Length: 407
Image (cartoon, rainbow, N blue to C red):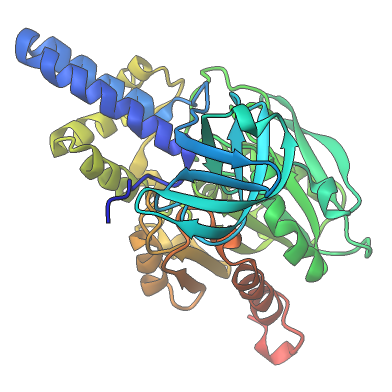
């Protein structure tokens, strides 16, 4: 059966594709002009890793939309053929549909139910962008929502606050991934509310909502943690006690760096990671294989990111040392319970580092694995599974009712 296999996270997908195009052009040019071009290619690879996408590409062909039957027929891919609830943007991001059940497939297409059209006219759309964040605002959950600005090193950062009925409730801070916004995290609000938590849906630098950093580059967690630290500071000023951090994809790396760097880390009683980057080496190694990049290119690009002075070639204000972001190697520094949710067919962030972290720290890590949910779409594929795992962990591990089972 012929189907395209695509990385699941659109923003990451765009970044690695851009590297692939660079690789093709630079490979040809290098044969002609030699070392200078190769050096430029390596710099371009490193730059793509830390540069936010300015435009979200719409790459999924839309073959047909039936507004009467409320169906859409799309190119069949590893993502679009999965059962569950998803988003489909079109019209350069101006249009949005919510997509439901798979109704039928062919060798090359999949027809799915349209749950709702929130914006735009899908009948004129020819391509779309498949995504996991299903809700656009937390108000769609019929919950009380406050808009607040959290003071951060780069300026006020917008956040949504969803308070529990109990003013003394513990807090959950939800941290989105690369190339998306806080809307990605809305999916987890219901389960945390069910467990009695108030929730902060945070923004962080260079996400298109929060203030831009001076260099406008990703720190892959080495700088973004400061914005989550700012949320913890904001909560501490309001006498918050217990806090659980949850991060998706690169947001997982941000959360882990917050735990080992923040002076407010004592407030954190647990961490949830969804499709998280536990070790950037594994992510870049995996994507290098997909792009058929020579191993020396990846190694030199990583060295370029971490070397003082040379890091400025890729536009970074500070070096980014991926060794500091390897939380398997730093596993002994982790001190709170961790719940990891990951799918073994992730497609962008390999689950290998999640498995390894669970192996080396079985005392604090609970790993829950899916096999067909793709990247950051575990809720979309099976919301009951997602909610049940988080709720059980919160009640059994973080806030056990039986004092004898407390950690």
